[in-house]
Image 1 (cartoon, rainbow, N blue to C red):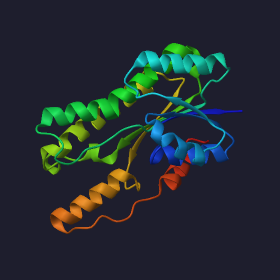
Image 2: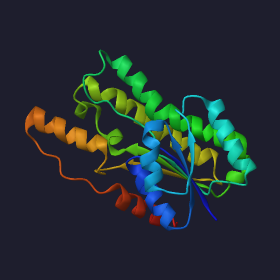
Image 3: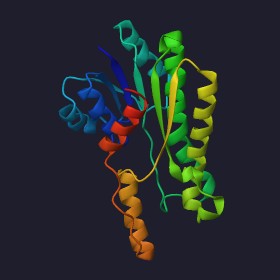
Image 4: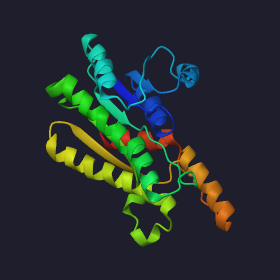
Length: 221
């Protein structure tokens, strides 16, 4: 049986999980909040779960070492964990950047470092999907206020890191996904804010499950 490691099981991560389980993959799902675990277990009954806030690499290494000891080697890794606060939660650009860098870049980086340490060459042939955003391709002039700079800066760092991984790990399939108009909570919140600020509208996005299906097919999975 093939195994998929799902880091971040909401939104796009959930879409990938739904498609992978129908393909016969055994899911190993990371979660942060124990209060949300019952709903995830209802969606994916009988799968494997482990708790981590993704801030402690040693905890991740222990979790992956336990998987390895049980004979599990991930064939697919989905790095979809992240967060965004494109609002007035921060008083300055530095605070915004620090929050988004931790939530969107360092979490993914730690997972890859930990899997490399535990599995090493056993990751040969593994597909790693790294979720980023199309907004990283925008001109700086189009990023109109500091509330977005922290998020964009962090996601650009994700892009650079993923592109480096593609060169450094030629035997691992690294897929950098700059998502565009996928119907996540982030897009829903952005739609609400844009409507309130300018009365403009943002169209409904593609479902995470449909988006993930297309990306899996592109990867030959």
